[in-house]
Length: 338
Image 1 (tube, rainbow, N blue to C red):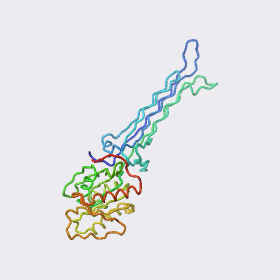
Image 2: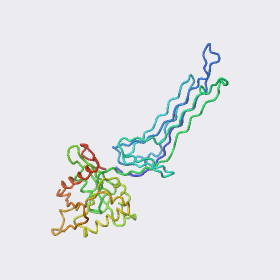
Image 3: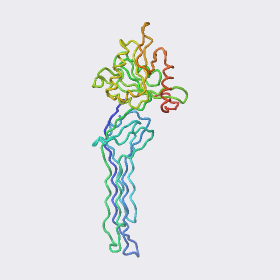
């Protein structure tokens, strides 16, 4: 599935139906009073989160959403039918902005969360409402009101508990493919990962958490180099960062400092998140490898996704961090991925 994390759409609620000008006409009632019915309300436009959606791809093909107008009123005090509402499904984690003012309208993070984004116009009143003792046969009714319309800019920030951060070829994709059901492309060259990948990691029965793998960061990413910058927004919601550094790195400490600097330049709040360092590819590590002490208070875990060394300890530690801060996903779902 193609991953799309930004889109613009136009939404237009339906206009209200016109009020009716009508007079009662029955046998033996030669001068019946006004009985024009009201117009129906125009259809509203709603946004609704859908956990099954993981991309804004659909909005690249359909960019206009127009609700039905209300039905006009009729004689005999018959009110027109309301226009049908439109419900637009979006992924959890979608930020909605007014494209004209750039103001954030909503940050839709809850499951099945609904937002009335454009209100349908009210139906016009029929002439029955305008009769008075001095004007018993009004020959006018109200037109329906216009429905609201606006252009929306939508941005998706993935909802994940753990964000994997590292240089290209640090082993992020391999790790997420081993401990979840996500199946990212894996190869021994830089930038194999071109889009974010999500995986649900099964910890124990009815206990699981969501892990996000983004394209590798390189030095200068904050200035636009490489692919990582455009996807760093997807780790802004994570509860913990797992910083992956390969055991065959020429300088583990320098790589760690570089990654922290790039994160800080993108958003200094990322460094306020809890983090741990995961030294990957221990199966190919030199026998005399000495892992330096990187930062006081930051846990350091050596693993091998290929041989399975350290994976249980990693999952234990991640679950401890995730569940200790906020309730993680509690579901028997095995996993997901693009």
